[in-house]
Length: 252
Image (cartoon, rainbow, N blue to C red):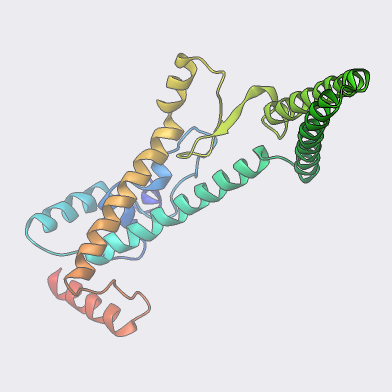
């Protein structure tokens, strides 16, 4: 309900107009982010601005009559943008936690270097075995071939270590975690279809999905206005605000 409860029902309509700074424009235009995540771990609490059903109904009536409230949509866009950007930062941070640590990166590089050296040494030894065979030095060729077998075993050990590190390093470990690119929650690749379905149908995921869809729609509308030559409202323009106030006073 936002801060509507702070305003007495008898005085609310007289004291507030659609453009009153205390009124939540996000609530008028669409869905206030504070209403999307109630009773979840991302609960934003009560909106500090007024959520008035009567003002929202009035806003819709005025829109139907052809009045333009471009500044409301722009304010809503900035409101959504703040929460979406915060979520994106959490997604990036969560992904970094799943990445390898610097020590793990160095160990991986060292294993790959050793594997490459073993491969080169094996190739050189095979060439030498061929030369020794051509010279009739069978015993030395067999000894060299025995060394090749040892090198191949050692290379296989490094390759297994490298695969094991790829599977278990980082915070993901054996759980095979990944980050949801919509709501920033961790998901396990080992989860069954039911658990994954529960996540995608959850209130937090659906809330962020809806928020992102609303944000994209608003971006398209604002871009369309700019293409027509309309500029985004400058809320720092005092003269523009004064004109709106005078117009509203005359209207009401």
